[in-house]
Length: 200
Image (tube, rainbow, N blue to C red; front, side):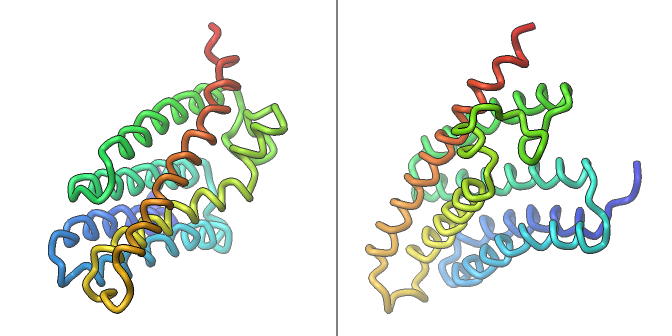
């Protein structure tokens, strides 16, 4: 196995930072740090791809690692928030179930030469392709989750007490509902179109 590239190290470091964030959230005086670390994790999600392209390090392993780490980070946050009763338990359950089904179907599709996104996407129906594979949909979904993570932490951070924390929490919960709905909306087309890879 070839050694890890710089882009891969950046990707893996995001997971380490996410674990640190959840680890310090139970200490109120460190929640502001957790807020800024979360913003850095979100920024690094684009940084690893930029480095991979700039240094010509883009490859299938890096792309797969990025998807796996995105899933892990997502679940670290949802499970962590649920353990603090900041979001309902059903939120991480929905993301976990959807993620496992979608990723397994995409693995089947990949064995047939298709990809989740891009020119060789497994999505055929134009509406499904827009919901799942379009840059607009992917960007909107990622931003919604990122804002939800930041707002949930901000709502429980005394450093933001100059603002109405109840209003921040209300906004955070709306973003959680939107992200969860988006999760399902983008997952269902994969299940429907992926059925053609599972008929055997």
